[in-house]
Image 1 (spheres, one colour):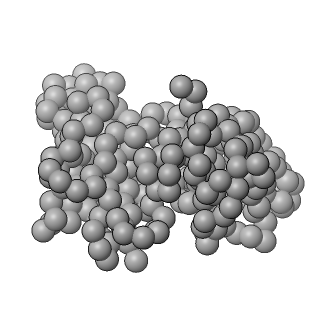
Image 2: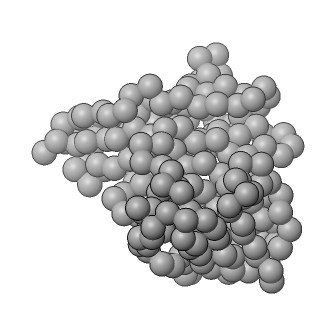
Length: 114
Length: 113
């Protein structure tokens, strides 16, 4: 079985400060990891993904994520938060080999305070 | 490039009524997904199509939910009869290939009274 956990329901950060949204995962194999963002009344938008290679993945809107195999984590980061980054962020995982549906986390609401 | 289209955007029905949602994926995308997103939760896969064949419907409540993608392009998800707990946002997504990056539509918000 595979699972993904987002331990924080909400993260508050001041505009201009660095932000981190946490994600840990569990798969019985090599993980294929994603981050999506959801703005109010809209569908999910792809931010970035990790398959193999460099542990630091860069994505859209200045976001990046660091894959840490020993800690089974894939935290989302941004050096300087913008008010427009306020949204709901979802981490997702699937096993890399063979078929397995993508499993989404419960989401973390990011609030960037002006 | 046009995105994933869904209609309607909102729907309010009474329990035991039926409802249908429509999705048109990005042109050329072979894989189509329907998700249910209940408030406060992440999306849950209901059904995945590869062209017009079903890849995974293990979490689809088949006694009341049905979906089809007859020509391998657009798709319809139906609920009959609806229950109160079906109130959710129904998201459609598509990808070029199985389980690659998914592109989501705006969703249909269903309220069952």
